[in-house]
Image 1 (cartoon, rainbow, N blue to C red):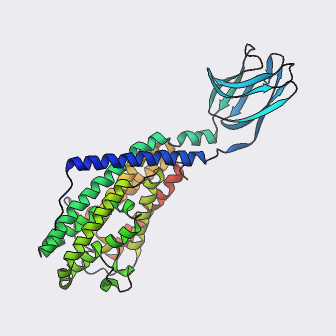
Image 2 (image 1 turned 90 degrees about the horizontal axis):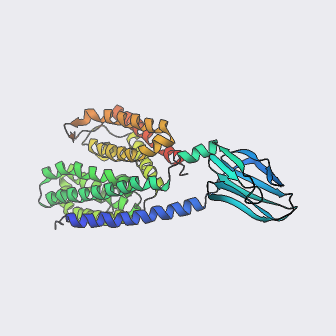
Image 3 (image 1 turned 90 degrees about the vertical axis):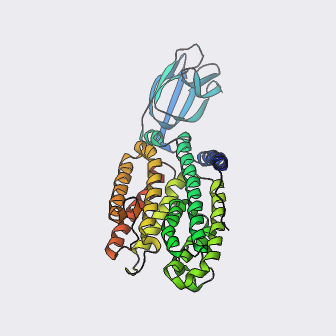
Length: 393
């Protein structure tokens, strides 16, 4: 039975509900991640301020940005308070410091010019100069919560849109299988599986679905004869071996059911900022390892060296790099430039495998596999550096 595609209105509703889940997840991540992160203190940096009469000693203080511990000593005859002010805003303070006593406070300060009160509120104010430091420079380069909302929302929409494309292309493939149109099914297989590769970085977190949708025969005890061997790889095997094609209809039905489940899970996935690079690194590293393995160079284009699949990987990876670029330009320009070079090299390696807008159904020779594996490994390594560069780890 062929399932109908979702209506445009339903797609809009699906995207909207998914974005609500996404925004809630970002807020929870930010609160939990930041609340548990204690800023580093500059070792040994402390300032003692003694208040005598109507002045502070020292009355003009310079400290590096970050955390500083101030010890306030009251040598006057009355209780007083000591404040750090940014204009009219109180940054921090200690009140009711009794005569002859002292109080301490540790405050994290950003670069800038501040006032300090010295005893009575009508006393002349002192000055606090906070200079830039390595810590403050790193903090300034670290993207804020708001900067992640756009990339994550766009990635969520990308996943949902590509999941709809996957559903439509898989339906066409299964319809051809059930109609016995095997030549047509062979033509439809590559673009259908390419649609899966585009979202596999996120889909691979659902281990049960990933196994049913895309696991290779080598991962099962009885290989191609194992009943658990299903999904795209089972269809691919059947299309390459005509005697197996008659059993592909039921496999196609299971494939469509699993894709429907995948769409539901992707709509509810709670994406976090570190997932953009983390998911993509894992996908590139796995495919690099697969391409580097020794396999036969003869036979039809199958598995991870399919040019169509590599094109899908290029599209998904470059999409994530594009989303991260505005953040990396500020936090780590060199890494952003590395991604530009990475995907230029990937595109160049794919160029001989293209005919117009389609990918040729050929199998890579061993030299091509090794070269492609090296490119994917380089991209995986750069994605592996990204979360640290953005202050997410």
